[in-house]
Image 1: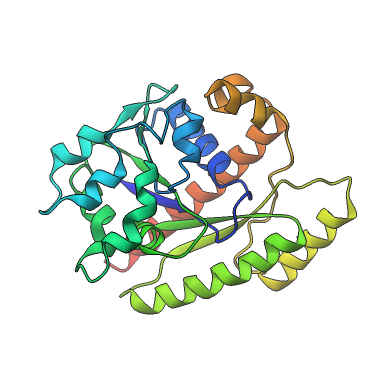
Image 2: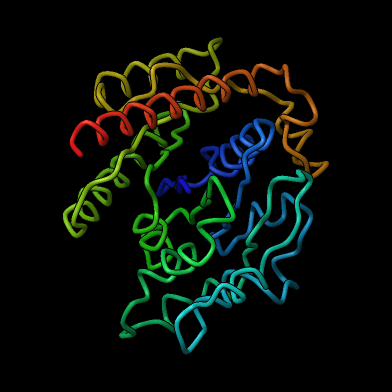
Length: 267
């Protein structure tokens, strides 16, 4: 089971769109996909027509257990999505209280890792949508993931937000026994505007090794899909946004295969 976290310490950069679209593409390939919504705002939960205000069983329940997580605890919170091969662990607004309620409690940074270990034979991929802030929720995602995707809108303020994310990443990497792969994904690129072009050039010059070589373009069809609560992969698989995410997924799978070969060579 591969775990991909999608995070940035700035909102509105396309995190949820990235998670949902990548999940749709993986499901189309026949992969079993689990989505985790760790954002108290519950954008991904709302995307799939669930109400974070009213949901009873959510990721929040895992953090409130007074004992180690069991498989049935995880399975109890899962709900269906528009994709047959995609399940969702929804968010509750109560996640916003986690920081305060888990202070001075040991092991709170590994709740998600432990939960996923209970079901690692039931899913091929886990994609985690994160809140736009550093805290116990994002720490959980980073501790659990094999690869981190950092969507960055191609505009000035988003680039400044990326600087904060990179500092966080450096700090977390030092606290782990090993580093993990990460990739910066330029999103909402509008080739008609100079602002997008300049921002993309800045990103590529500042983070040449970490940048994905292509971009996710602006595509209004993403909005149409979200209104219907489905992935754009289902609604319009040939749209330019989906085609771009297909290219990103191909790249990620190639990197994963390369890592597997390198690991096998050192055995």
